[in-house]
Image 1 (spheres, helix red, strand yellow):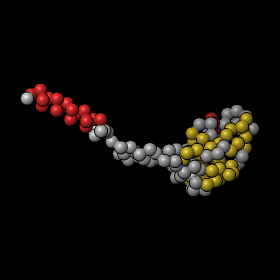
Image 2 (cartoon, helix red, strand yellow):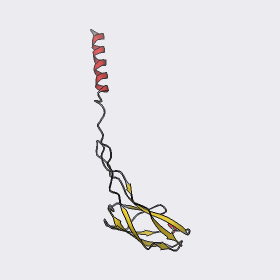
Image 3 (cartoon, rainbow, N blue to C red):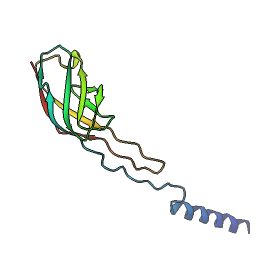
Length: 128
């Protein structure tokens, strides 16, 4: 009788684990909102000087970040315009820098979900 109880308990445990009883269902993250850059003002600056850059476009989230030789934190963001101060250390050498904007992803809940981060098109900026 003791062996039968042990076999029954082992079988019940195996069926419970095989059915995924202990695992949680997850929902994958969905695509986020992709920003789009249409204009940079100014579109060039002298090397080794800090400057204010205004990025015009669409679909900028309030927590968007600017990618200009590293990640820069904007000082002001609206859905159509971002203002960011580019430090002199980000524009040290003459050449072209590709500017993008990233809308960070949002975390999901207990069972997943949320959104993935999305990055805009590239816009060239000239460092003189």
